[in-house]
Image 1: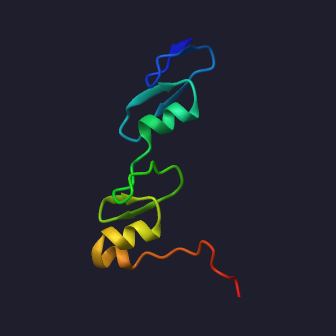
Image 2: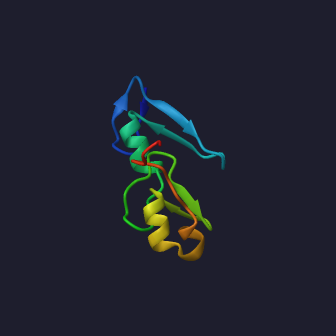
Length: 86
């Protein structure tokens, strides 16, 4: 068993995540892993669980937040959520 580094739960189904930088983290749930590792949108502050958007080394949860906060480069970001296919 291993202890979750977010909540301290000692759980027999805990798991380990290795990051690109070589850091290793132990969690008992995806919820705890997200809480500890997910980047935060620089505009609205939400945890970025999906792909998100990176503009000039800054992370945003969506195209809207990048357009509002990242200047000219952010203005270039678009998405098709809710767009009519025809």
